[in-house]
Image 1 (cartoon, helix red, strand yellow):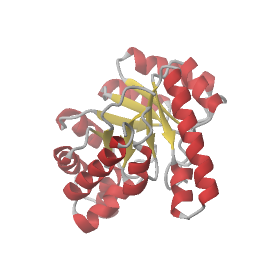
Image 2 (cartoon, helix red, strand yellow):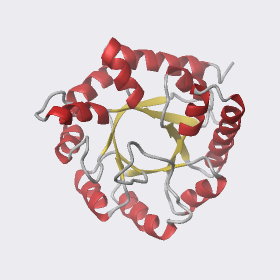
Image 3 (cartoon, rainbow, N blue to C red):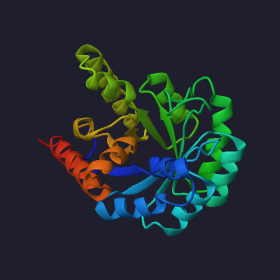
Image 4 (cartoon, one colour):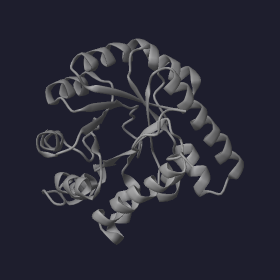
Length: 253
């Protein structure tokens, strides 16, 4: 077990841009949301620039990089367009994710094993620019091992299947997915990788996964933005931060 560390919270502001783009114009502003999230306890901001610019736009990335007081994590496909943009913008981090134009949200993790030859040079270029590279992958030993071998310093474990099973009351599936996550986090940590987790987390699942000491960062967006419609973004970020802190406290118990 690694030394217990502060569990960082990255707040994804994509769906502030989704709401803005539904009508056009400049309101609501992802940058304003990012500032509120940081003031409420977020350790960083995540934004996913998609090929079709369905929510976050290029100028959002530029403004976030220039104006927020915490690290910016750019989620991106491993394409030449996105790599070039990342090299120009120089976010603190870049999380490489799979992307299909028709998907509503990121479905599954990268196939690092099958796409090794395509991903390796992208990872190398981003690493050389001082951008912390993360690969969004399933908690699968072959994917984790390949991520380490191509030089990615960080993985983000896709925890969506576990979150969905928990929400559906599918106890056996949830338990199996939980064990995969825990074993994957241990393996990655043993290989020298920094371990993050994301996709589908809510207050309860974030508190639960905080007990996995190898995980040092959670990236959460859709749930927080949905809850913010009822309670306000400041309140929900503070509630998420509190849930994560409760869970983290159980690691040392």
